[in-house]
Length: 122
Image 1: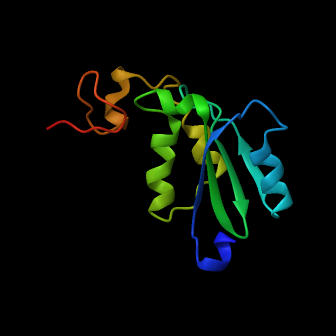
Image 2: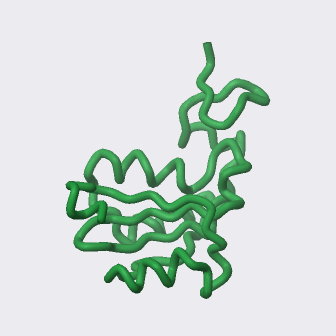
Image 3: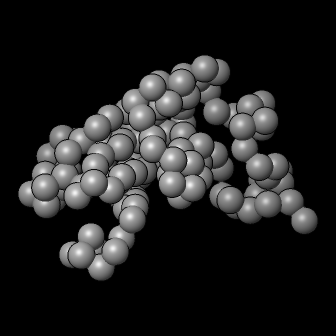
């Protein structure tokens, strides 16, 4: 298992976050994981979820989050990769502003107009 090989963080992508019977949630439970937070008050990315598995954070991006340039996932992942403890209060704080759009560019790196997800300006 990944935790035996030194995995510090886990990211799950393409989960059907609205479906409590999605295999990722059952697999997480069977592997000894615990759901911490299911959903955040920011859109797109409101179905983002956070769990713990063997003391490590597991961040889940719902399938719909892969089709927007910027989502709540983009706000949480850098903090997680930096080793910060992501708590429910921080996730609740994403609700300040609520909608993540081009108008909220101050939260994200600058993207080119119509650029592919994550592509930075030249």
